[in-house]
Amino acid sequence: MATLRFGQHIIKSSAVFLKTELSFALVNRKPVVPGHVLVCPLRVVERFRDLRPEEVADLFMTTQRVANGIEKHFQASSLTIAIQDGPEAGQTVKHVHVHVLPRKAGDFEKNDSIYDEISAEGYYGIFQDSMKWLKEAGTLQKHDRESEDVPSKWRSEEEMAREATELSSLFN
Image (tube, rainbow, N blue to C red; front, side):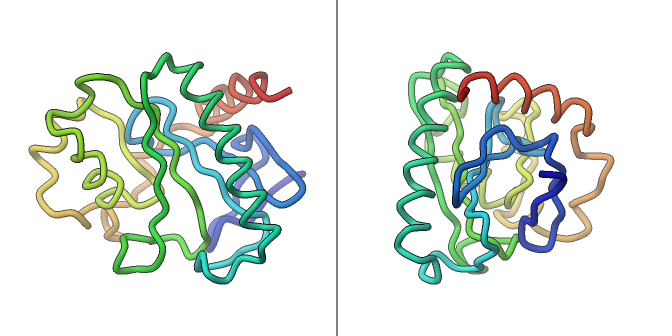
């Protein structure tokens, strides 16, 4: 597995930490919180409604497996699991994907602000001081704009590969 497609993007195998028959899980290049990962069907499908029944089953079983591992590994007490299905829902990558975010008490001033953050970040996410960033974010779709998605805001390939290697050990 040299690369996988994620909508319009090519994903290096070094960012992938789990692959099943029909799905894969990858680390996020700009996570909203530490441990924010994505689970996607292998087949590039833009909308959830277009998945085959076996893809839905595999996607959700893989998401459940990933979520359990991520919650324990990042010592979280809860999870946010979300799908943005279509542009008006904040989807920027035309490939169904499930966001899995480990949550801890107090990680956001208002608990539901995580949804603004996901919507503002699209698949890329961002992790800084979440409270400070939320105050500066302004609009929900700020970081979905092409002008906001710049390589200088991404984690390095090496950092992503290290995290993917660490996470892959949870699923062997």
